[in-house]
Image (cartoon, rainbow, N blue to C red; front, side, top):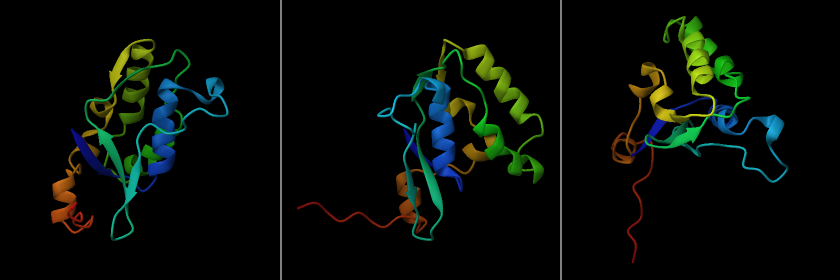
Length: 133
């Protein structure tokens, strides 16, 4: 299922998520840079488009890195528990070489804000699609 998650730092987050599978140290010049695409809502906010079933194999050199930096303001604001970065780091360490369903690692704070395409349209965040002829 595809869901939209509000992500003010959508581009760096998608890059950091891709880094779990393809760290910058192993990327080539023509390598993909992002795991999930994002959209700009009608109000200008950014939303990461996340496939809730998408699984990756966590690379042996993967680190939490940029994800921790993105989560820190949410931790500082009390929206995400203080131990979140440590828990995610331990999860990544435990999954090196193994499969991880990416959405399952998202903190509950973000999952609670996830919207379907229909909810995005009904909420006025995305336009109603034009009918196809």
